[in-house]
Image 1 (cartoon, rainbow, N blue to C red):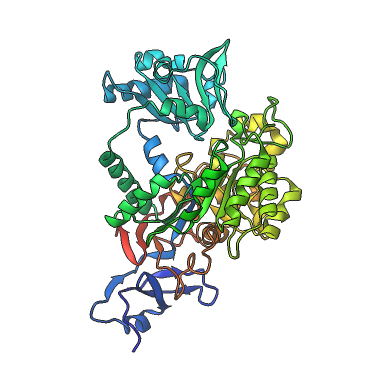
Image 2 (cartoon, rainbow, N blue to C red):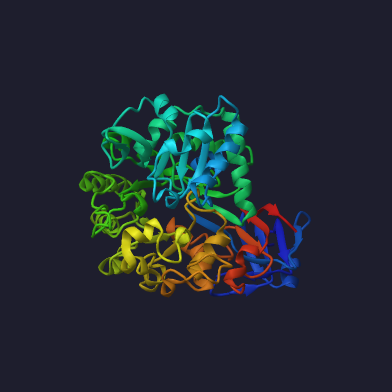
Length: 535
């Protein structure tokens, strides 16, 4: 006698992405897997004594949405303080910092996150611009891209920074006439100040992490690819799962730095198969460049300020050797590569290293890519992991820092999602939160519109690279599954696949892209368990 399901959802509109049965109205779940799909009567007839029934009328289910590039733990910590993402001027920033200072009191650090570069066009990036707002208290502000921070003199004093600092990797404590301005470029420089910021206790941090996962579920996320993993953070995922607070599947790549000795990298190789029920390792994360806005993206041709000619790893050959260490041990390799020269270097390293059977290496961001390198993604089986909503800093007149540095020709030929997909490359989509909002509806709208949803007056950036609604859904489901080499068990609503589903108030494929942000998420199911129910 066939097993009775634990859960049956009936009366719904279900877009399965299963070519054998693209649509159905009901599905059954057992042991965290899809047991069956079909019509209401057939599946309800399989109900047993312990089967839960959910009336799915009014819910449009898709395979569970995955954010293929997100910083869940770092993002949770770094988005405390004043939200500055939409601050358009220095005075706007100042007013928000005054309010934040009032919250933390006279002895606290003043934090802010989400800064954009454009408010500093005429002044340069300087901490003293906010001296009056923070009244001499230590201040540390993060820029939206996560590659620059701004400290004031009080914070620099705490960190003991009095002048230029030499780094092994591409990073800088920016100085004018030998004196630090407060601008800290890239992680090695930012850590100088971050390391002296008072840390919250473990229970406080745990509560923040638990709340973040609840928020991920509220916007329909069932899985995330966490891009800031360390061996120490595995204990956090273990604890979240043991307490029932891990409500998304998580892949945790181990982040590798340019100055990490190869012996230390090899010491991590036994962690490849570390896993729980909902989380696992098996991947290594690298940076080969930075970002366009600070001149640290690695470009074939320099930007308008003569920058972009150096990689994040001072010796690219050493990066390639590090990739080979992990690839030869069966790890998936994941590389941050924004500039076209960086993308080329990552592809070269992957080609030289090879990959284990069934493992797909991947490249993150790919804001620029040369024509000659596009076919190599399919040829090498490399996944293109992109975030079209990174274009949200775009200005209609092209005067934003990103476009100014690259010029009109490269700007028009950037974020080539459609070209890569048409070439046969697997395409995965995500947010890069804390860099951008993690709500996948925002990301889906940007992928389809190449502009902000609801802003019809805004000219799209590279409209020929827009994805269709169905292609976009695949980017958050089947493409995301392939990005972690799990396309045979995830990304579709199909018998034997994981029971991870997102329930909208209407089919997102049939919803106008300008209306996606207002499309309610009614239900989120992870591993056969309802983790969000807004009916």
